[in-house]
Image 1: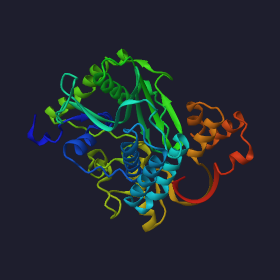
Image 2: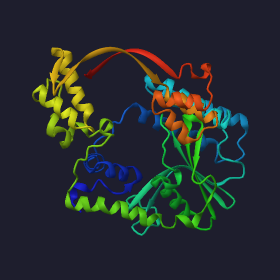
Image 3: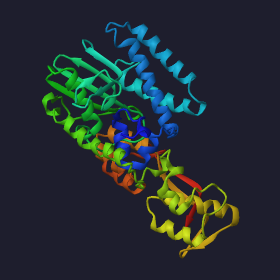
Image 4: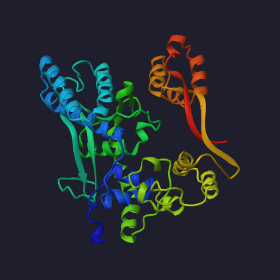
Length: 383
């Protein structure tokens, strides 16, 4: 293996998912060590995870933690987290903490009485044969948010703090299946494994099959991991990391260096368009996945020099009234009305879809009020 790639000691669930999306982003982030500046949402998620871990470390491991001590620990956890967070994160962190309390109580009681073998924010590493190892430079690794055992059932719980509920089944989620393999290796005698993905903001938990699964069903997961990581190490040996434009490009920390973007938009340094307006406009029409970059270039041009015509369209700023959705509120109200996860996702996909869901679930005017918001906005677009 080339010396320049010595940074990649252990593949992880996150790095594999990044490689699947875009090998070039994987190289910049996980091999060359480009800082992952993915924004405020990721920063707040990290802070919330750390807060929950801090609280659980102070309470769950004891098993007999008095309620007042738990209450004090929960208050201290929030105080320390908020004190260490940027001002713009505080309101959102309070929302996350309040939702956590509604789900688990105040103070939160997350780990059930009688639980043993409690792991909190614990990292694990596999060796090349799929066995757990203490060597931090193993073949593959991951960090479990919370795991505990009650009798013959081992529960693995993953916190999600973002504003979106994922539609993929927990049972089919590659990361959750990897966690199940960790549980299987740690406790070969355990009979059942329960996988739970908890969306803190929405007080909603998604379970693997709705019940614990026989642990032996996860024995094939290591072969799945090997199949997913083999292309990564082959790419390292060949030094072959093509950029593959993707819908997540707008959030990629490597975007400013991306050759796929630079090929037609240049570095977009804010000093004007890198080519004729007509050329950029045509590229905007043709490049769906990189539309945001082309739009940003056109927008700066219009702000500086006025409206332009390109590829048969007129680009300028327009005043209009738009109906928008509070998607978090949509998720909550549909689930509260007895809807499924699929119902809530569909209802939050757009205003028209929400109107249909409002009729289907007999939402009152008071319940709809505030979910659909009319805003007068100035929007940049082409007509």
